[in-house]
Length: 127
Image (cartoon, rainbow, N blue to C red; front, side, top):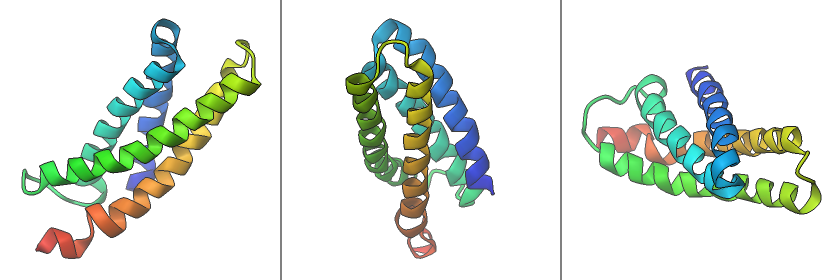
């Protein structure tokens, strides 16, 4: 439940920042910046709220591993943008946001699985 709550909040923040930045920087740069901000805040929140990890111990390693997972999310959302860019017209902003939300959700499921079995696995936290 906590992971889902963090995911919902960060996805709404991501979509909001993307919508604003897209106007000035274009869809791909706006997506990258919005996703970086969402991923950093999501990793920090999930580290503490979902997986109960506090303090600086292994924080750098966990954020580095989170960055690798971020790259998969960036590929998913950039792919979604490429589809909209090639198929849609400039008036497809709502479809663009919907497809980005779906890509972010898919990335969130992947992110949770990798956090659980790799980054914040209990065996790695106790070692």
